[in-house]
Every structure is written in C-alpha cells, then in structure tokens.
Image (cartoon, rainbow, N blue to C red):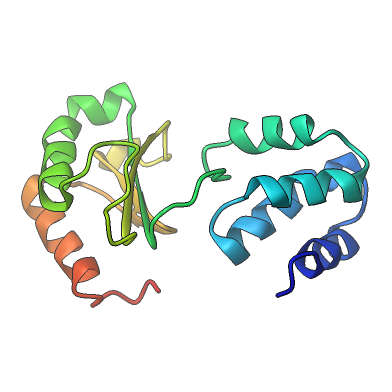
Length: 158
C-alpha cells in the first residue's frame, strides 16, 4: 500500500476522533507488524493530535510494537505465578535455541523474544504467545518441540 494510503483508509474506517487512535494503531500493526515513526506522524496529522501523544499511546501498550520485530514475536509471561512454575527454565531454553536475549531479534529477522505482563493463563503457566497463538504448561522439552516447528515453518501461523 502506498505510504499515506493505509493511514487514510484506516482513519476513514475508524474515524478522526482521539478515541480512534488505538484501533488505528492496532490496524497498522496488523498490516505492517510495527508502527514506524513516519506512521506515527501521519496518524498525528490525520487525527490533529501531537506525534508525542501518538508515540506515548503506542509505546505504552506492549502489543503495539514501535520497533520492527521478527516474523514470530514470542512474548513470555513474566508474572510471579509463571515464575513459580519454572518460567526461568523455559526462558533459558528459548534463549538457548534462538541464541538471543529478551528484547532481541534473531539475525534472520525470524524471531523476537519479549517478556510481557500477565497473558491470562496463570492456571496453565508458564505461558507464552507466539504472535497470536497461546502456548501453555511449558517446559524446556515442550519449548524445543514448539520452536522446532516454527524454525522449520511447520506451523499454521504465517
């Protein structure tokens, strides 16, 4: 989509009110996987609000990425409950397989590893999301199986 056309279409769809900001930001992430500074300026102009306001909103929410991410964004829950269910062992397995730390993206841009607050799966922790797919009751062994499928592109998530 041309540079400004996406934002114009989203503003026409969601409206020009301040309350339209989050749906517009979510749609940009759906279309482009992150919200660039250029997109934030375009949205600010269209909604007649400051670019700082757009950035402040976008950067506040963990699912509104303001940095380019990998094809598969792994978000591992960092709550106390998941910690008590061996989250650190799971995180160690992910880091070991992908050779990245939290906040990093693999050199091939395939995976980004992030920590996030509660995913809502405390009863089945530790839990993680890979893009929009939930994985629960994780163990290092289960991580190896899950990530192997993503590495080999054997997943339905594309």
